[in-house]
Image (cartoon, rainbow, N blue to C red; front, side, top):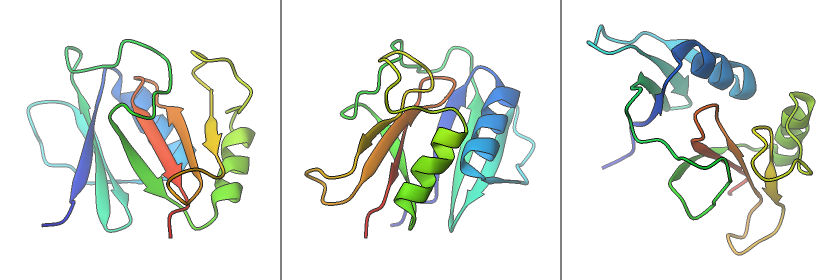
Length: 131
């Protein structure tokens, strides 16, 4: 067994496509003609699938809870990625609930740096520098 893709629900496809394309640089790939709207992105050997589902399972709070469901992107340049997010408007000092809040753990129990942020539908996204 190996992971193939992560699916993320959204209420606004254009907004989510722009977020994952512009913030993470993901490349959109062809998607079969399912009965629901959505978009697929390549992410290394894996994929990120965006699915429009206005009544899907959404987090109701705009806080970053690292113990809640999330998925992680890996980067070989953690600090460069953080600088890129800051250049795109994310801030480590943004208050809890701010959609541009960036929670960064440069050291911690995982043994590698981790950062967390929310996508436009409050899905939690981790970025890490795992070996």
